[in-house]
Length: 251
Image 1: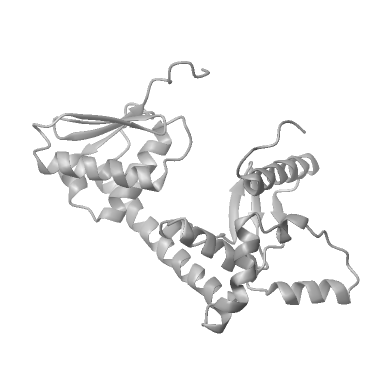
Image 2: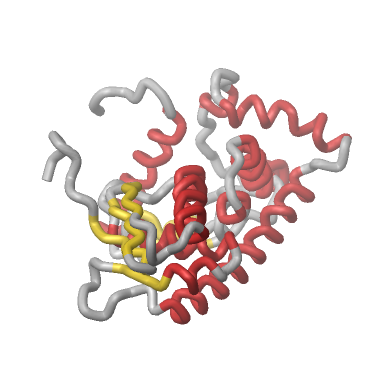
């Protein structure tokens, strides 16, 4: 119930479904929800994120397990083609829901699905696309381990205040760009109050920071805001703290 979103209807419907599933899971004492996402779904997700210019984490597509609404989601069928799943259900005479939006060409995913036979002729079938997503997930996990080490190296979290983060600008500048982006995102997501920082905006912020550091970190003062966090460069240190609420926003 309630007003329907004017844009992003599939995403809004998906979020609503997960909220209801999580609520039902908690009410029954379940700790996991199993979904029927297949290899075809994984391939389509990868294509959609490629078109949006997602980073490595996004191109890893759907994880086999993830947390949402306080409940773990498990996707055990990501290696199974949709055709095999449907055939198995039909043979076992198990009914399943057919979402009409899956055929609505006003949405991106159905249009991409219609292109899959053409892509398959060029080698871009669901098997190869899902395998690419799996390899990118493996690379993303490795980068996260490196980012963990870099975070410890920089002592990113200030010990005296869990809501304040600061690190040496010179040491930060010496790290690979992908690691710097991830450390900046972690700090902003922890300190901010407006949701996860978007990759494109993070990249723009990092470019500004890199330029300021190159011009002399100890002589340059810089202040920026992103995703509800205040980022500043003062006397050779980068500080990331909660930003004041926007005027007119709810407390």
